[in-house]
Image (tube, rainbow, N blue to C red):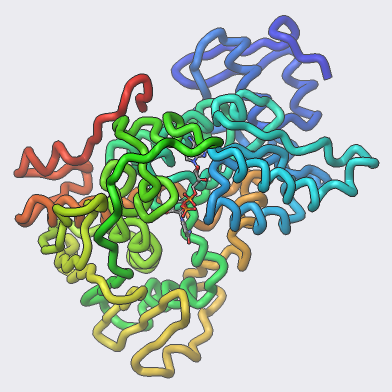
Length: 455
Ligand SMILES: NC(=O)c1ccc[n+]([C@@H]2O[C@H](COP(=O)([O-])OP(=O)(O)OC[C@H]3O[C@@H](n4cnc5c(N)ncnc54)[C@H](O)[C@@H]3O)[C@@H](O)[C@H]2O)c1
């Protein structure tokens, strides 16, 4: 369908776009949210976007429609996500992007193998390879992107994607700073984007949903405490400068992080997880999973945090290891975050329940046999996190792990990390969403970005 600026009429006022004339024709034909937004921008001549766009305008439930996906960051986890999405009938991967040449080429080959046989029918037109995510995002035929870069790139790329009208699947942890989390949340809501957080146990580990349902429906009595454990971080890393290997665009890999001489451990070793310029370490990187479950079972975050942890001063890695954080929710519920495994334990007046990725335990054990009644709170949406995202893009309904809970659980990691680094108790105002009574700690809610990158 031809749809130019001339034959559509949009007027934009206070974030609401009014549609007249040719819009009626468009409405009865399927257009994507992305196409709608870009046409709206063109027509209004501004970046004024609607807060909410009704799903009905997208012809979302058409059974034949597949979500066109771009994959940004196809290393270890991104490669796994690619395999996962190649198995989802509701989406088709059409582009891959990575500043490491052989990774993007390998990923494209995998896509080609999966869909190659659909070329004859025209259902698959090929997989485009990109070094720079901005070129991928410029494509108007891509509906959504899967972002699995190192942490320092999550929010800058997700923001650019959402602003270009795309939906986003973003790996955990969310932002390098709390300011980044807030910026992405605002953009997701402003643009009406679908956001799925890469905390995949919300779907794949169905016992996690069950545990949270037990807590939310009062089966362990009144909640007294939540204890979270996550695997420890690491010390070490060799900082000796080395030549940048062929096929790596190191400047693009660093992006908003400081320019420093290349060494292998930054990019190909643990640096991507354990260097503070790129991450806050496993406290947030792994902690994101059990903290997400804590927030799913009890959708609040503590208002006080204090704790200890080792911040290494030797070697390349400088994120916290061996942490021991204690906190308190406004309700008086106790909170702890420690190292030593992967588990979220909810303790109530009538028993406790402890889901982890590997399983679930409870006291009394009879809790595990409870059937949640139809009129009680149910949390499980799907047992496949990737399909759940594709389905959400099509239906415009919030997926299992949405932006609001992602931001809150990521705040818990950042606040714990800040309390450790400040070596004193910090207080969180959940209404103003700021640290109160400690200016130095409050300043740690933001991070500088290397020019020209900005939020
Ligand atoms: N959900 C989970 O269970 C899980 C498991 C492992 C890792 N992760 C997360 O996945 C992310 C990636 O971790 P990883 O271990 O796969 O790291 P990785 O280094 O193996 O992969 C990251 C990839 O992103 C690429 N990249 C860097 N800058 C980019 C840019 N500007 N544009 C496009 N690609 C870029 C890198 O070149 C690399 O290939 C991390 O945020 C990590 O926390 C999640």
